[in-house]
Image (cartoon, rainbow, N blue to C red):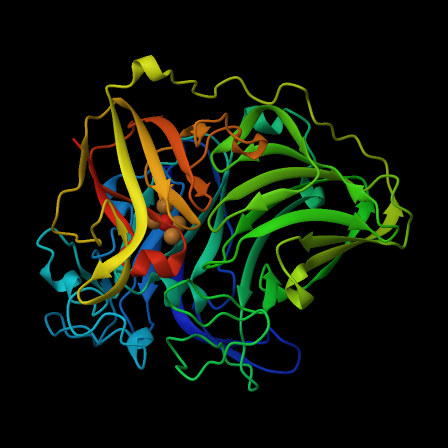
Length: 479
Ligand code: C2O
Ligand code: CU
Ligand code: CU
């Protein structure tokens, strides 16, 4: 609905049993009864209010990933929406993932206690209005849970959805549109024999089996690949160009995607956009790595693929059944008036090193926290009460991010450019404006951004969701 020029949506977070695998029902936590949650479509600069109502048995927090959002609506992990009967002051339940794992010892991080000790937390009961100005480059955003210490299990259980921002300039380009534009939310999950989700937090007896990694510390992997909530879907397409807006909504799984025809030939993946909107010009890839939380906007041309044959989307990093992601069956020839212009956008920020008021360095490493193992930024686990980084509104900074193992690092509020990787130029898929950069093992990357938009308390963190819950997050205060 619309009131006072602000579009308003209402989403009820509730439990639902959905048929994900054929013939069985999977209990999920949902946004509005579906998985993924409803896709919201917005116009650039037209504010949207999403009224969330929490009918789940646990507190929740909604974050619009990639949104340029005032802090009050950004979903800080302690800004809880409590369910109707949840006691305000009582300590939260211990993290279910810790049963039988004992990685955190007792108390402190992982016990959900910080939420109650954060003097700045703004806690509401049952409902909360999140308002998004969406005054930003058009792109595919996604909303997901962001509760302190419990983000990974909440996303795993279903709390994720897409939010597309559009504008006239982008629509005037003539890119594939309508039924030739497909948002693809890729997420792996594991299921038990009854169709229930398998997660170390839910079932400490989860066994490792091919494709499944139950290690909470490393990040949880599933052996079923879902696209828009369906396992290994086959989508019927025209022999025409398609715009695939790919989001990796997996907790911890990395993909390296390629498109392979029945004849074994690879189709080009023509990248037109990154996390934060269109590139300056298209970049052609034969395969495309995508880390958790990253988005790639890609055009693929099915013209010339024999009618009736298939194009499989394959994950080169997977094996066995996790190698397959989905398939397209090319059904018919059509007239295709779409195009991919040589110039896609001319509003990409191009900050220079010389503009940066400072350079900061952060290590992303495993370490000890509260007597157990965790993941640390600059040697420290997340603490809402600590001040980590303070930046001046409008200032340009260079950040050097140093990783031990794979860490997809995400900044709230801003988009950034990748300047370098371990002293070398960025990779072809680093083009454009990003909000998540996939650090590879042992790598250091430099990013540059201007901290524009709003003052307030934001975050940056690893988007391996289990790493995030196990401490790899820090405060970013814009003043
Ligand atoms: Cu996708 Cu801090 O989040
Ligand atoms: Cu985010
Ligand atoms: Cu990580």
